[in-house]
Image (tube, rainbow, N blue to C red; front, top):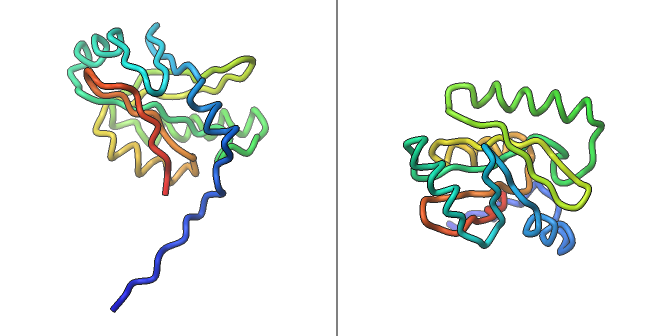
Length: 139
């Protein structure tokens, strides 16, 4: 029996939004990461934290739809509460004049992938020891 394909609930991501993700600087603990690039300082941060991988995630602006700042802050606080059993650092993602609060979750990235879906995010940025940073899209 052939199973029907599940439809993705997130809207299609435009090329403009994908370009913005790739040009964004993701920062935590004084370390800046860009998608598609390796960052030796991030390798040191991962080593000092005793992990081999981590992920940047935010609860701001689900599916890249701009939300009021108060709403974004409340959802970011809920995200931190959801991840309270995992080690994380405060982080940001910024590009040009745009900036969003993020968390750098120092844990198994599969956990962060599940949380990404719950908070309706287009994607997360995964950093692994001695590898380039990758954008992983939901769905």
